[in-house]
Length: 460
Image (cartoon, rainbow, N blue to C red):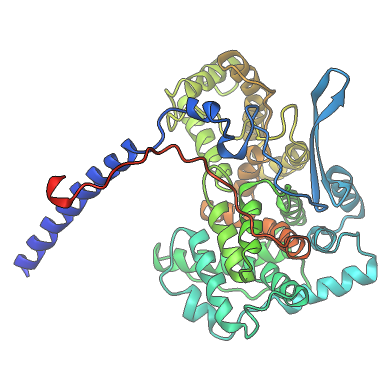
């Protein structure tokens, strides 16, 4: 046994040395000079010099407005987000005025292109309720096996496994794809929450709770019902989560996970593979995981700054963040700035009003004041410390993590909550790609290698 252990350790050391040297060698042969992109007129990251994405297609699903045309050219304006032509602010106001849950109706709008009437909404809601179940023993045989702290990976594995239970998994006709989409929209919250409970039980030795969803409740209510040990939640909590889901549901075809959806769809792949690819894209900290970084940054701020009411102290901390002297030393103030918006992110503006009400209910007013102070100070600090081509404002991730913490949602579920919402947008874009596109998406890369003559092995 000892001999085997020594042999294993020696081989492990050899692997580490080999991979370290190999990684260094690989890095040496990668592009090191960003100026080469200008030299060859290549748009790095499919963006122009101003960070604007390269146009890759047409869509009628949503529109992001951050600039207005003037005789002098494009000028930044207050950000707007339209779902199928309807302003997100107007949609949320209408839902709030009626004091109803809006996830289901907004999902209908994105999938079918129109606002549902009462009959259409009821039929659609009933269909989502019908699909809100998993195959027999799926939780035991799939979700409970090999539980992981990374719930996004658990989700991806579960989605791919569900394909094995679908006799028409590879059928990409529109009616079948719509059936699959509606099913996955309904099942994703169950897969995520059950995946978390499995991890919490097997890895943290906590009690195991598997609550079945209630077919009489909305998506937001069911998420909280399945998550909470006692299944209880307040009306405000459920409505705030419902708004969060609506705000995260869709954001144009150019964001990373939605573009991934369209790329994989264009290859003719099945719905399960497409959603798994989108989940893998969303989980990165530069995309769906950004709100976790905001919460971690704010926790570090509260530990570091002695007087949280002193603007000068908070501003000094933000400066240290930009100078890579605080938190993760990446030089970023998380939750600030957006690839498209400059003056304001409409989703953050909507969120803030609901955050304030929830903070009062939860006794978190002091935390809300800190968030508000950082939201005010950060753009000024960034403008002073950095050369920026456009304005900087709080994005939706700045407040979403704070909301989830007040809803007692564990950190491991922050990005999965995003996925529960964004899957609706992914499905809408998948269907649009299937209807409108007949070519596989194939961007090009400019090769700058030099040709070399082959050298025999003995002469290297």
